[in-house]
Image (tube, rainbow, N blue to C red; front, side, top):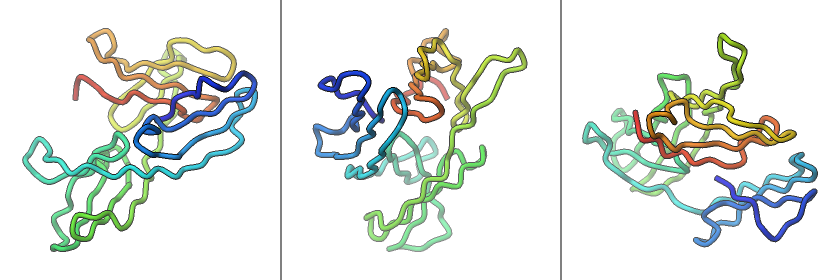
Length: 168
């Protein structure tokens, strides 16, 4: 998740990881709303949690990975919770330390049957609320029921997310 650095002026934009205060140095540089450089050097670690079924899970960068029980300790294998939606992202751990991660969960840009643009991420759908040039603002389709999850895209790249849904 990235926030626009307020010290930059249009047409130049620097989007920094929202965990910058915690030491993360990942950023995206834009010029006239076109992405020119992505430095993906996130250094924040995953959080081990218990999922709704009481099983061990990992929360990492706004995503949940559930334990795959086929692997025996000290190794563990975690799969993205959106595996039923086609996500194949995985995390491998050795004694509760992440040794490998591969993120293959991609947003799907679609149109509704009425021709309106939507983004599908996992089991969540986002509707476009407004657009200014290549920058678009999206809200969860359950916003009318109180969900405050949002996205901001620059062309077809998600540059900022608030991925905390109030529903399942």
